[in-house]
View 1 (cartoon, rainbow, N blue to C red):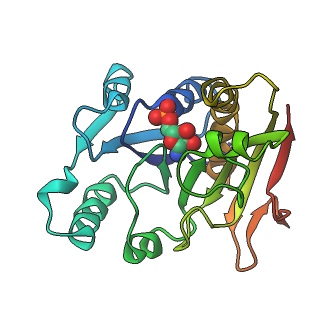
View 2 (tube, rainbow, N blue to C red):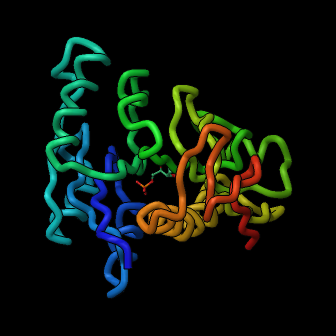
View 3 (cartoon, rainbow, N blue to C red):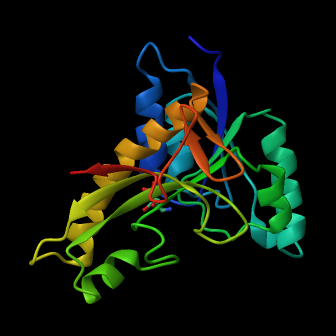
Length: 216
Ligand code: GRF
């Protein structure tokens, strides 16, 4: 068994992905330890989930800072006090500065509710419906300076049903998010997943442009 991998999770909202990560660490052999959960919103329900699980929490209000750089450098200080090997974005609704992204290069993961590179940004489920896509899904990727554009690690593909609304589609995607994020975090914690110069590597092999693909 490899050493424990300390992880800091950043979020702004309900934290169902955090919950999936917490649940995945409860198996006896998990190498992942969530050292802290940090939010830019003190009322984020994800913070309550963390407290319920006995995890340290912090909140840092971005509105109290002059600009993005000032907030991000305070955030770096807060995160680094926990000495994480990995930082996980789980619904953190802030665009991160280039300095922040560079500081955590190769140890910053995000989950996005679309099959990237399709539908970067917001309202992904509605956009997939409007395009009459037959498939949709979610992606875990390393974060780089390009928004929702870093090397892909894993994607889960779900069917779009003819009677789907944005809500029903979102639910189907969310269920898969809760599987692929813990999987990717575990790969990283086990030392199997790294960011190389050409892209994401799993067990020493360069992953395909789509990352590891899971069809449901
Ligand atoms: C998820 O849909 C994730 O893909 C996106 O933000 C949402 C967070 O959801 N980045 P939750 O707070 O984990 O429920």
